[in-house]
Amino acid sequence: MTDKVLFITGASSGIGAATARQAASAGWRVALFARNHDKLRDLSEEIGKDSALALGGDVTDLDSLHGAIGKTVAHFGGVNAVFANAGTGLDTPGIEHGDPEEWRGMIGVNILGPLLTLKAAYGALKVSKGHFVVTGSAAGRRHIPGSVYGASKWFVHGLAGNVAEEMRAWGGRATVIAPGMVDTPFFEQPKPDKLKPDDVARAVLYALEQPRHANVQEIFVMPTG
Image 1: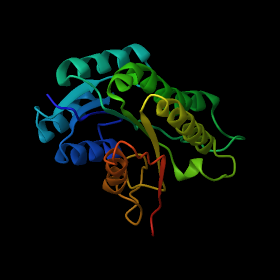
Image 2: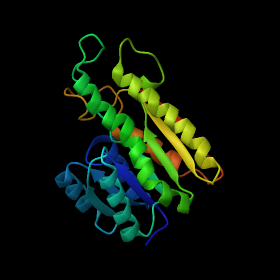
Image 3: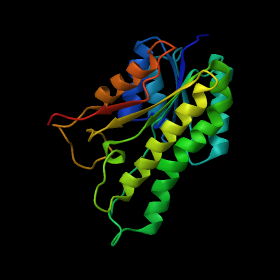
């Protein structure tokens, strides 16, 4: 149906949903993956069912991701780019008072999530000489006292750099998007003076739409407020 197909995790709200809208407006078909299938269905209907496919699932479950990639390929004919965007934070930051069970949950989403997403999509991306984009963070570019969340994003930045080198060997690309604080449902309280999801989505589209001979490996976006 098209040679521009983007698979997005964490697509039900925030950065993922904003990226889906902007990508669809730019001519991409979008496969929307998240746990909240109701929100995905609503977003798919908003974008238009010819351009969007809602796929409920869990980024910590490789079988779920394999199934979603398979459905994307069957529906749209392939996968040209993957945006591993799903992420979560901690209710109790720091080491001394942090909850190891909460750490395990965050590591599952923030570390295993991008790894499993890439694992599931690798074959399809290799066929298309595609592009892997992942949401890092300003917290993965500087040291923050006791931040276990920040440490998980340091992993993401390291993964993106290593994957860029691996994919380059067969004509693929990889990019990490590193935003500062973004006004999304990730935070309980609104952050009106911070970045908006659309700001980050524009960075994703900028990386995706570079000519094939160019790879923007990192985009670091900070709020002025």
